[in-house]
Image (cartoon, rainbow, N blue to C red; front, side, top):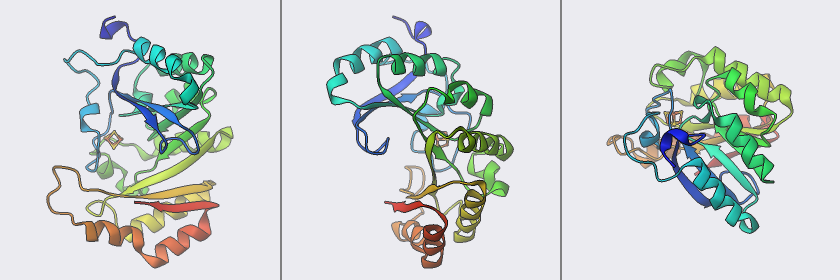
Length: 237
Ligand code: SF4
């Protein structure tokens, strides 16, 4: 089947993951396309929505794959890229759900309308919050609109769907003060679960040291504040 007929454009698949959905063994589908250009992006090859190469995976092939592996999988996670960018997402999520899988979604919440279309079929969301409001443009390569992200987050909080927020801590882009501000904002918004993720320098970053990455996520006052602010908080290295 050609790429055009696939319900969604898939960049890649991880057939087996224990870190992308809490307490579940999941297959992860990395959807092609992202409207943002975060300087710390690990998945740059997924950023363009259209690629000329013949895709390795169509959605139909992925569905056959997960049906065969049903005995070994608890869940399917739609990740990216930014899954909300593709119009076929809700159809794809429903089809996976109909097969009896629990469904997770990784998103930066760039399009609240697209999130609204899919949220009722999703069991868990990993929500990337890039940093404080005034830095959202620079943290997303000039494209992120914080008010839209906040609408998505607010909808998620009110929906009752289980979720976590997490921030990639790139010391080129974020300071300890920025992370305090982000934590304060999330606490006030009603978020219960928050994680700081250690930045591992991307290939183009030749200057950031591991010590700098570690220093940002190890600040004692910051981690004490975040521990006290959320029901669940941790630093992921
Ligand atoms: S939102 Fe994610 S996939 Fe998109 S550019 Fe940023 S880090 Fe990369």
